[in-house]
Structure formats: C-alpha cells, structure tokens
Length: 538
Image 1 (cartoon, rainbow, N blue to C red):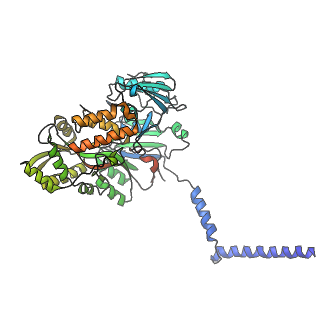
Image 2: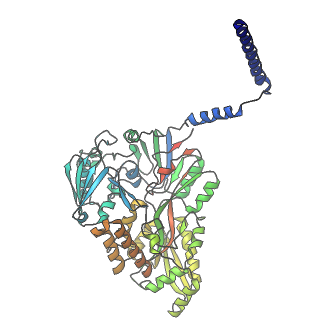
Image 3: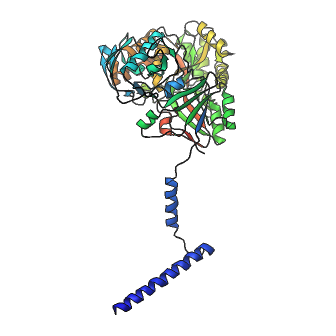
C-alpha cells in the first residue's frame, strides 16, 4: 500500500512539473498566462530602492563674487569661509540660541568680557594636522595683526583643548559674534612661516567639508572634498571636484545655467548683492530648473538721510511709509519674497511677532499730511545702485507711489562705485538699503546699522542706539527671555520713529539644473547656501 502511495505521489509531482514548464513556455511566447503582478511590483520596488544614483565627478557652480583665496582686508571670501572653515559656534535664529560647532561648551566670565571655550577633540584640518586651542589662538592673533574690526581683544591657550577669548566690552554679542563668517578657524599651516600671525597666506586650510586645490583670481576656484569631514559624519560626497566659476553679471550667470556651462547658480553667501534677480526665479522654474529658497533675516528698506532736512522730521518719514504699498512691490518678484508689513525683520526673527507691529498703507492720508505741512510737490532724490536691476524696478515703483502721495521723487541711478561715494557723502534724500543678512549676522547687522557711531548705519537716535547697545552689551541679555524683551522694545522704538521704511523680506536662492540632487535639510541650515551634499546625476 505504501508503495502505491509513493508511486502515485511521484506521478503527481511529475505531472505538476510538466504543467509548470508548459505554463512558463506559454507565458514567454504568448504572454497569455496569468502574471503575479504583486510579486513583480515588489521586485521592481526592491530594485529601485537598492540602485544608487551615479554622479558626475565634477560639480560647477556659477557665482557672482571672487572667493579671494589669497586674502584681502577682510580675509578670504565668504564662500570659503563657509565651506573651507568652520567656527567655534553657530547661531540658530529660530530659537535665538548659540549652538556648538568646533567648541562643545563654553563658560561666560566677567559679564562676557572673557569666554572660555572647551573644544571638541579628534577633529583634523584637511591637511591632517590637529584642530586644537593653538589653532584658535593663531586665528585670533592673525585677525588682530591684520587690524580686523571684528577681532577679539586676545586669546590665551589654557590647554590643548581649552582656550580663553577676551573682549573689550561685555555682553551676549561677544558670544554670538563667534558664529560670524570672519571668525572661521584656520590652520596655522595656512601661512608661511607656519604659525606666524603676520605670515603670508598660502591657502586657507580648515576643518570644513572643502579643501582648496586651485585658484585663478576673478575666474575660478577648485575644491575637493575634505574626507576627514565626511568620514566624521559617516557619509560620502557626491562629487570629486567642485568648481566655483566667477560670473559677476547676473544675466550672464543665468545664461551659463541655461547653456549647461554650470550646474547651478547661487546668491552671494554674504547676502544683499550678486544674487539671482528675484523676478527671474519663476521664469527659471517654468523652464524646468530647480529653484531652492531659504528665508533669511534680511529686509530691504528705504533708508533716509535723517541728519538733514527734510527727513530729519520723523513725521515726514512716516508719510513715506504711508505711501508705500508693499504688496505691489513683491509682485515685481512674482511674490518670491515677503512684504514687510509687520516689522523690520521677518516673523521668525526673535521677538518680531511679539512686537505686534503693523505698517499702514494710506496714500490719501500721506497726501493730507504733506498738504498740512505745506510740502505738496516736495522734491526728493532716491539713490539707486545701477548694478542691481531688480532694485531699479523697485525704485521706479516707489517713485510712482510717492508721486501719488504728493511727492516729486527723482531717481538717481548710478554705478556701484558712485553709489558708495554718494552714500558716504550723504548726497541723497532716500536710498534703497538692506538690514540684516543670513542668520549668523542677525546681531552683527544690528550693531552695524543701529549702534552709535556705526560706519554703515541705517539710522541713529538716542533711544534706538541706547536700546541697541543694551541688547548687545548688557550682561543681563545672556538670558534669552530678557534679550527678547529688549528686542521687542527696540523694534517698537524704531517703528515709532520710523527710522527706516521696511519694504520686503528677502530670501537666499540656489537655482540648479534638473539633474542636480540637493539635500534640502542642509542647504540653508543657517541661512546662506552650502553645497556639502550636492551632486550631478549622470
């Protein structure tokens, strides 16, 4: 009986095998057999998931400024400061916090006149030398030797991984200033003789993701990945070579992107200059290019020559604000930027929303005030930089809006060099200017624009300057909540006096070819664009 069962079972298996073989042959030749679509889908999904994209060896970026890899009055350029060098700390504007970078912790002494930084261990510069307290001291000493305006008073090495940095004045500004572009830490091997603060810069060597390979002034800079940086983060770069191609003219940069000469174009890391015209972003997006935007605390404003008539009168400054329709201004840029109706800075700036500021648009009211003051038809000159085409469009619209309110505005559109001379000489009534910058410059621009006696001031008054000074230098303002309350008071004072007229909050942009991959989470982490994780798919 058992024999029969075995024979019978074997026969069934043989028949089943034949049926399966026949079925396979039939499927192959006629495709009429039923297909397990779920199994096929799963296989394809697995294949897609496990297939890594292949990237070209070289990434080319079109950029509006020379990176100054041989240095200058302010040191190397902003691009290498954010890609070759790193800082002891970074600034997180969303939480108004200073966060660790090369330093893991710090101690505030004497109200902030001395800050002791405890450094991370095991970090290497791109040439393989160790990052330590001596490198920090070298960087500070070199800034002092070169007379850099943001240089601390001095630095003392406590041990290999502890350094004390000293300042002339107390305050929170000293800590947050360490996140500034210019405070990037450079290896002592960057200069000859090695370690000499007065030495000649050979090339900047940092702990950041890029290392310098080649450079031709005003033409290009070539970088390679700093593998110490990538390995420390357990990742690999998507390029072997990164070329920064210097293309000063904004329209030529766009043409280079369209032609494939460059893989992407980027705004100047500094902000406020050499950027992609905002009114071109929608056009490029429709053409299939990838447009990436990051909000930054940079606001374009009308700055007044407030030291002389007619705009030494705060009421007249308020009349100008009443005449400005900010919604119309952002239409120039296809609404790629935000209208500044609620304060000098965008709402993500610390304390800005809580200040509860609202600018009014009322040209009829503006005209009535001018009439009462006997100033209908008041002639005013607006200074405009010819090198920034979209600012000319803004100025032309402002001219129309001011005419509607009873002014007689005249545009003075001049080349960049002439603009600077006229600005410094006070040869204007109004001009377009910017307040702020990328995240790390939030407090620095308060200092530059509103601190008493500032070189690049936007507005000064006893009340506004006093509040600015207090925010930056009062040791109490290391406390975040106290600092926020002072900022709110500062914003309200500036609004009450109408020191400047905010127009729109700008962005930082990168425009890339369709085959460029970008890690969006890191691209604008601190405001300015960074290219650590980009790649061009083959």
